Amino acid sequence: MGHLDVPQFLGLLVVMFASAKLLGALAQWIGQPAVLGELLAGVIRRFMAFAIRRCF
Image (tube, rainbow, N blue to C red; front, side):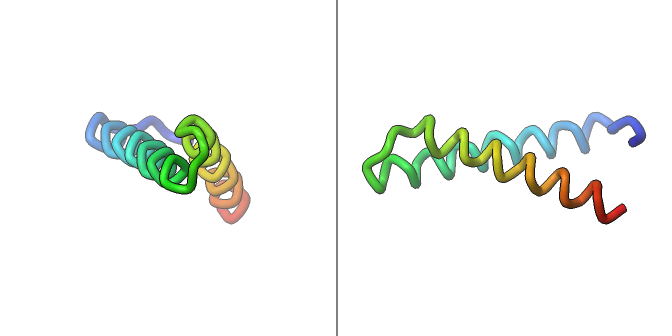
């Protein structure tokens, strides 16, 4: 895996934070703590990263 340029890194950081906030808000909406949704976002991102890495 090569290095990331600054714009790519910042873009990935925005995607990570946005997905955590989105799933945190969704968890609160269904009556669960926001941290549960944020953790779920991390698990989903990790699973997707492994799946993408396995394909290449």
